[in-house]
Image (cartoon, one colour):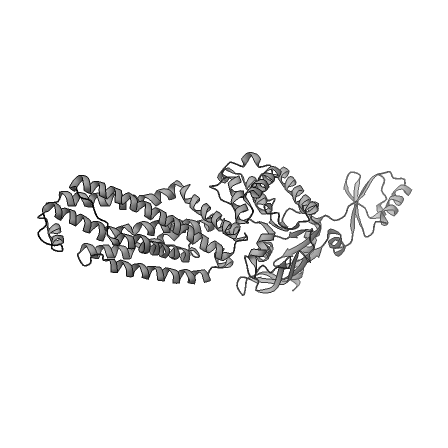
Amino acid sequence: MKRSMEKALIRKDIRAITANRRLLAALWIVPLVMTILLPTILICVIAFAPLESDELQSLATLLPANLSAAELRGTVADLIFNSMLPLFFLMIPIMAASVMAASSFVGEKEKRTLETLLLSPMSLRQIFYAKILAAFLLSMAVSLLSFAAMLFVAEAESFFLMEHFILPSVNWIVLLLLVSPAVSLLAITLIVQGSAKAQTVEEAQQRGAFLVLPVIILAAAQFSGLLLLSIWILLIFGILCAAVAVWMMRRSYRHFTYETLLK
Amino acid sequence: MKAVTAERLTKKYTPEKTALDGVSFSLNPGEIFGFLGPNGAGKTTTVKLLGGMLTPTGGTCRVLDLDPAKDPAAVHSISGFVTEHAQMYDNMTGMDNLLFYAAVFAMPEREGKRRAQELLEQLDLTNAADQKLSTYSTGMRQRLSLARAMLHSPKILFLDEPTSGLDPESARSVNELIRRLAKEAGTTVFLCTHQLRYAQEICTCYGLVDRGRLLTVGTLQELRSRTTSTIPVTIQADRVPADLGLQSKEGDVYTISVSEEKEIPEIVRAIVAAGGNVYHVSARELTLEEIYFHFLENASKQEVSQ
């Protein structure tokens, strides 16, 4: 019986996003850029760039020698797909989780529907975790769908332009099953923490944007050749994010009272 | 068991800002309690304390023997709330809103749907059931809020200005519904309102608050007996002797205040003895509105003399 209350709330929260055109657009624009546009540009560059270009040569030094030109292009495509795209991909769960958490926590306050919900027989704890779960589930769904779309587009382009099938590495498994859930949770917690102070949805969403910053720094480091994403970095990053998210979530629940919420 | 009790209930938002100051009362089940007072008197704060949305800084309150501060979820499952700040979802239809709240109140799906249809019918919203809330007028929203509060057939209804924004017809039908609910289902109603005339029609007892203090509490009769006990009498007559102390209002209509009803026949006799004709005599008891202002003015006089 109790579970049905939470299910109803989760369903309502997700439907509130999918029924709102403006929010839905916010939800799709980042994935569209990250999964269609960016891989397309990268693959075109790899397929058409002259082999003598500095960038390709510097990457080629990292690879086993005596590869044919076609093999070289294919290997570089694999490398970029498995070591560079994952970082950009992380923007997707961050953004999806932020949009959803902001609308579900702060949006209810803004539209004065929160008090109605708090006056229901659901406990504060049930409401808190049901809302987090709703944001988490939506973020995961968007991430997995985006990955499927990206894989399809990248493989198709790579095959038609270079007759090469990109081989996704184990990096992606770690990313999709550990890092992306952990980062989603972290974004949600940041928004929830701010939800007590933020009065509008936009204000709350900006907090989530802070999370994008470390990702951009990581990406920049990669571009300058400082760092190639290895499975170890991903594992450590994922576990760290998850630990911080769980710790912060527990902490912010303690500040979660009827009185502070309705202020 | 009392339906609602408050004992020296106090809420201070900051040490200087006291919203409610030592308020005590208790309500029997089935009572319609009119909680009256000007804006900022502490009515909404009281409802929030009884709903567990605020924690008292002093004293206690109980709703059917449950402590809202300790077990809010249990209080919520037996009570319904209509307050200004408890809105519903604009992007959903009236029906979907009710079905959502039915699920949140752990009602089985079919039961929730039946109850929602029944209440929409009673509150004259059946035609708007499939419209989004964003198209609703203030009055329709208010009625839907009432439907939402009654969905789970609560034992106690807390209504904070339920008829504000309603046209006279809707206000009347809402009041009728509240009265029927108390009479037939034994629901206790805690009603905060400004509309004293409607309150007098449906409430069985009253509490008057001002600046966080409870001025008086009781039935209309009890409140009347606590005010100055004069009865205003209106007499329509001609050739009225001047020494009776009647004050001319307009034409042949006169008014006088008497302390007891048995003074009235003496006045009539005196007019007739002086050769006058009496066309109409009516003694009027103080209305709730008059009682309300009496207490409020006394309270501010006391404040000044202090």
